[in-house]
Length: 206
Image 1 (cartoon, one colour):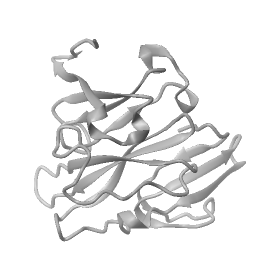
Image 2: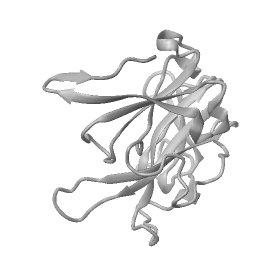
Image 3: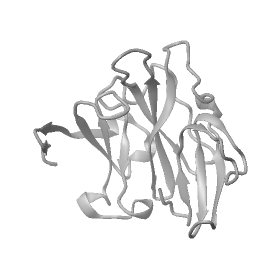
């Protein structure tokens, strides 16, 4: 993901770092924020901006709900980073589908060094499974694109409660001038996407 600064931000999932040659501070976290700079390999350099320890160590499960924190989408809009996180459960039984619920968007105004408050359990911005894996749609560097009214809205898409695949996708959007509030009512559900054979159907934007 490209930001307003000339760097690439990388959000590793299950951030257990085995090869630390390109990171100055290895971390073992459920999620972490790294910065990658350079032009072409081997001139690539990485640094851990924030190991996000408040979201738990690698694979750390909370006894409250038997789940762990994981990151979903990351985007830069007008110099501010927005990251969606949610609760994830790895079942130890067939069909081995990783379940997700209770997503929240947090933000950073200093390029990932510090973030807004860690979500409390059972107090999610998007409770339940319907919008539990929000991934942002990025329109150009730092959200400077204009297609699909991206100069007015920030879009995110989520499935219905699993880490991969799922039964349908839900598309949501929030006005660019409201996303910094981190206010759930400000995000509108635009359309539910579903497969019919090989076709992906969706209601039109209004």
